[in-house]
Image (tube, rainbow, N blue to C red; front, side):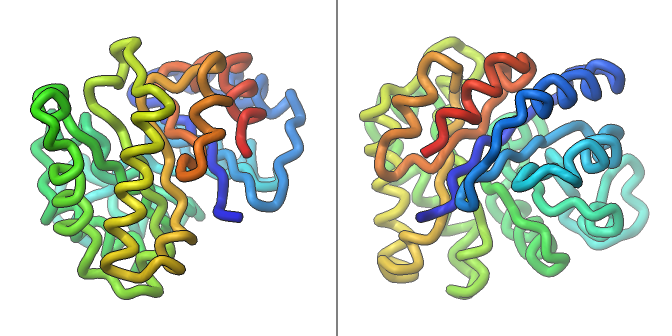
Length: 253
């Protein structure tokens, strides 16, 4: 079975003390993950070492950075490189979140560079893609998201594409309270897998985990995750509530 993943994206939330308490509360639920299940905490940069320390003795619990820069090193004040992340043992990085694309004008080309650097340093990219409301209303969401994949990922070899986790986020459902129906989520996830299959073959496409991100909550996670092509979720607001997120973790296939 493909990896089933509950990924928490804290965004720019929590003080150090609040974050530490949140992790303690979630981990104290003692949810035993199966071998094909993972929980990942994407925390702000200042909390990475603390979160890694909290999770390092937990089976299949990991930490992710929320971003990295698209250069190896240099005079880029305020940026964080993948080499820095590797040096403190961070195994995952979230790339191309819709907020990064919108607020910081991250292009598909820039994200391709970030993906390459991450893989070069053995850090697994959680690559985000998804459409805004006007694209969904126009009915062109499939081609829109297909371009994001092609321009940022399709230069990768078969071996490397299998190292990427994809997160589909309908931008119109992030933080709005709106959620894509389980049918809409499955439809897009199946389309993404078919696009991957055209490029790399069905066997490779079937190995790649595709997460759903867009107002995942305790009360809808089970239904969303039950869809055959939905392999878990990238969870925003609900991941800041220990009870909500533990329920979401427990909803993994």
